[in-house]
Image (tube, rainbow, N blue to C red; front, side, top):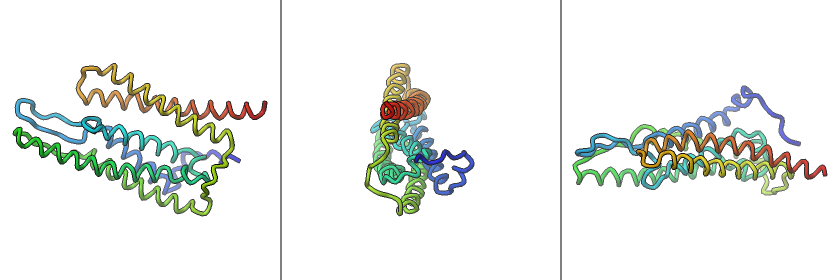
Length: 228
């Protein structure tokens, strides 16, 4: 039997869930904003986003978005399937690891500015993303611990539940790819800050919309197929 749909107020009363949502939200905000401010002779000050160089911010946004969906979904939050319950925790831990690598890359880049007469510093959004990832990791671990008595590696979900999950993930990925492609074409030749802003404005809302449509559509299609 699917879990009863809860109101926003009831959802936010769950402290672990609220902390996880806040941590993942902070991760998303930090990943979307510039990570470094740099000064170079003849160029002046300019910001460097996490979408440049290794592009770690893009992956962090994907981790955070999927984690938010799993945390907000009643079915995933109350699931007996370990991978769904532990998903936000695993994604948050992966974000912590990725940010550690990004920090080393940022330091290497900043050190490379000195021979060119430049300098730079890491901005607060980068540290905000780190704080969000750590907070989400702690809350995610608490959620897994709370749910440990009901967890199982048995994937015997109902057909509509499986179809909805697959459809939601597929829709979200498709929407993100479409949004990113559109953003890249619209921002062709623009500065990195404009390009990254368009990715945030287009790709992620589109990913959420198509993910929701994919989940609802696939679940309904599965129910119709079972009745026929």
